[in-house]
Length: 503
Ligand code: NAD
Image (tube, rainbow, N blue to C red; front, side, top):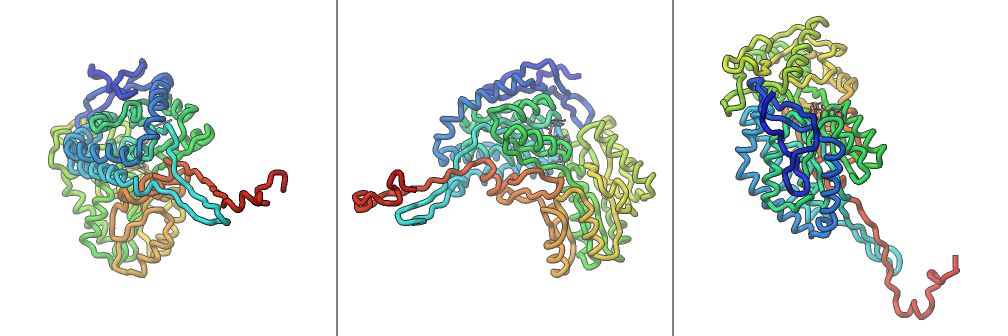
């Protein structure tokens, strides 16, 4: 247990300590040492943040969208200047390599750049003369106070999917980051204050279920954005909507990667390695089931094992030059290792065993090396469940149709990838596969800021997805106005349409 001060909440433009008796440790996954404490906020802390946001909302709503965007331009410049500093915090508390953290901060910066362009997307529609002298128009209004609840796996990027857009649309935003990785959000919050966000417009509270439930049920919160596991996403969607809120809730995934016999093998193996083992497999877009079609399977598995074995696994808290870091926590490491035992019991073959690696200068870190499990049958748990670690299962099939069938059986629907040189196979795949984000010769088809994160099935609950123009639609409500200006002649004649008492 560390004696470090708990990380602060941001409420009413000031950094405060939460009014709570409960705390979680924050661990350095590279060493297994506690590096800080997360306060687990109470309903009273949440209410405090909501009241500050409510007070700030009227002035923020009336601030011209161009002025709100100008704050985002400054935020973009300040975060770009401090990107390396934020990336190092992200690697320390999460365990991503420094290169991965830098890339994820860059994706977050792109969300701010998208938000800088909101003035030209914040438009409504108008049609003149829908009837004689009658015009109709829509304009966008912010919702009010909205909240975001985020997972551990992208400490900087996922929160940035939400608040630059929500704020520029004129809402006040309360962020509740994962209690395992709150430090990146606190640092970025400092930078947003430096950029000039008015007090109360952006808040941070920390916590677990108690804090989340207080957000979900608070009568003054209009909308909830959530990213996390499917079980919790469903709970958030059901509870939030039952309390009258607009909810977008992105959940877990089991992403399939199909390798056709005609695929260009070197880039395909590179794409598979990055997709399965990048960020230690802790990506909702990680490829976790490889599906080689036909006689290419032995070559794919052989090359994967060869490349995976050469990957350097090590500490990420000092910015070491490694290919893969630890997973997030000791219980998560045990859970992921447990899947290897389950697979062996069910009859699959561990072709590359990540349990064999040791990290000399991180003996207590949460390390598992790249792992490949071959001969996985569709009914096995490793073929169906989200493992969220550096584990790639391989299910061999004889045709693309068999691969489509596996896609149909999957309860998730985030991403799916095909490696091929055939335009026909790629087109068929894009048109038919049961997933919302498709990669063609791209291992991790995660949409960039300008496009929505379109998970399907149990990978998403709600209607409007996070990011892109759907993000703007989610954080705004439209108002329609119907206008009629009378011609003097009509007024004189007591226009029969409008004469009182006439039906
Ligand atoms: P999680 O569901 O455990 O936690 C997400 C958030 O919910 C956290 O802020 C956490 O504090 C809160 N939470 C946890 N348990 C809760 C409960 N019982 N009641 C209320 N709130 C609760 O997810 P995680 O382990 O932090 O993140 C990993 C998961 O996130 C994976 O399943 C991954 O696929 C998913 N993810 C999805 C996307 C996407 O876009 N679909 C992106 C990133 C991560």
